[in-house]
Length: 231
Picture: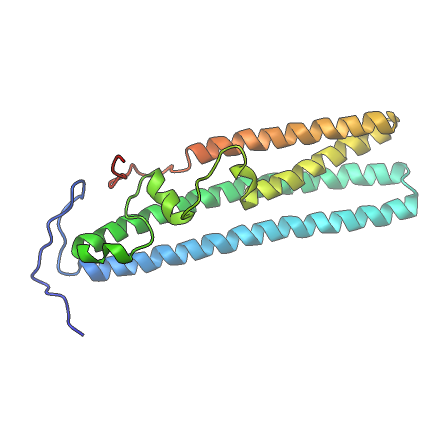
């Protein structure tokens, strides 16, 4: 294979911080693989945290079913549920928060990879037709690389990703907790269902508003150096 000429100096593109040295390609390649490995760790943690919550929720449902069968939905069942379900809700809440943090980390790594891709194309502009991801590091460029061909819509995008799925399940836990509390207070089936519906909607609304705010400003790191051109 032909080695690149180490004496070549490529002029930087508009907005670039400077020229390239003789070891630029090796350094860029090492950093690219480092960011790729970081993205892999991010996905692994996201799936692990989600699996922990789902496993805990499944175990709680099984435990509640056994207690209900033994106690015939009496006071013992109500007390046990009101102790167990808030713990599950807390686990779901912190899982959603961590998943949001993981998404921010992932956006930062994608931003770095887009910058490196921009440098690759400065070194070899003729290769641009073969790249399927973006070389721009602003919000639009990051979305193009992270979810190519998909235009996220704020009205339902929050429910598509893992945090949205966990938020729905966690809101069901909130509604179930309120409904069981209503049964414990002898509020009747109708009022208990109403309490559960109100808490479900309130919890889901909170998660939706919070997530939409996070999506709107997910790029919390450095300002873009290579923004997407107008048009």
